[in-house]
Length: 313
Image (cartoon, rainbow, N blue to C red; front, side, top):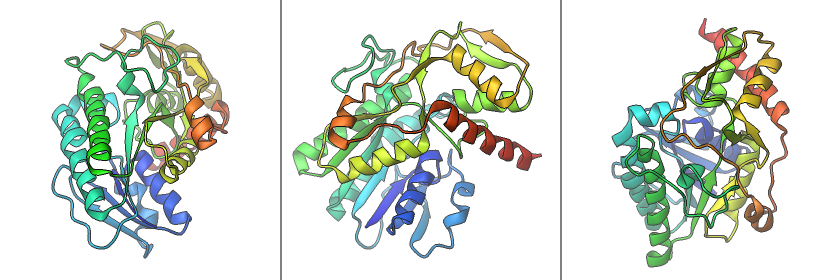
């Protein structure tokens, strides 16, 4: 196959590039590098089956030759990024998705949208199933990301229904692993960075809010299966093991050997209190579920961040 990945220099996008290249396919990565980094792709630049295009996906996207799939992963994905880049976040979810869908239609190829558990907002249903429509504040500070992804899902389904485009939608729950940015602002880089610097970990609220953390390799395997499947409705991919942020912080301190404890600050606006995927659909349709345990994944991630911090100094 020959696949195009928008956001290909990002955390998940770069791992997808690795996945398809290791399977013998050709990959075209597109990224404007606003939140991605070429460092994530350095090891691929000499590969004759890999090509990189620096471009904003909200602009007209032209690619010569055939494509078998377009995977749209371009978007700021952490609160720090989309609060600093609110208009760009909305544009990549709307205009960027439109351009990527247009490319897939022109190439008569399959399209996969990277959506998110944030379409569920601060959920009133727990765990979250794909049939739940969500509880989102459209004018709150997080609304720029939540609504961008909800629009992206809507236009993807419109292309599927109106143009017969082969589309897939993955709703990604919290995923972590190597190549996350140290200044990402999400909980794993925040906690691991603080722990490795010997600082107290910053916990928002009282830490009773929950998350479910999936290791990146499990997620990439699920995305690959979804792309190859014939299923067109959204599919949750994530680890259903739910953990409180307080428990998670203590686990990271223990694994990193940090004795500086915790500090507590107010909960951000519209921060979800609960987050846990129901992955019954993924189990049934894709025969998929995560394999990497939390502590195993965290040990590998901590080792990667330790090396990244060393290379910074």
